[in-house]
Image (cartoon, rainbow, N blue to C red; front, side, top):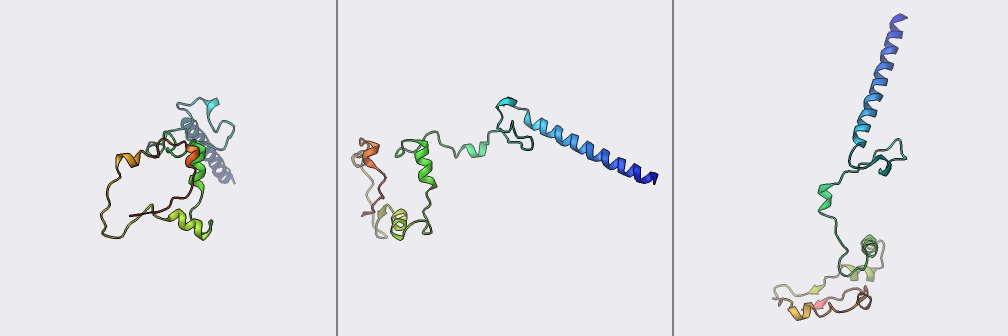
Length: 138
């Protein structure tokens, strides 16, 4: 009978020490460059959100939206639009996946000249719109 109480006491001690070490690890993780009141997980006692900068993902982040989009939100909305046949009509899907330039195999294509590449640069972004691109026959 006495041995069982020692075993139970030992289990409680191990459980309490485990909780203490887990809390210490969480406290160690939470200290860093970000102030505790500025943390994203300040109101969530059961969650730890890492505030570290992901260097591997940083190379995929863009400083600004591509030139045909006026705002970041406009670009993100365009990216979220699915291309697949399940979400679009057949004609819309074909137009979305159509190649920009159609040429027969083996045909030599001339490079784009400086004048033709800058011809559309002066247009306002509202005038250009977001019409589907028609393939150019070469």
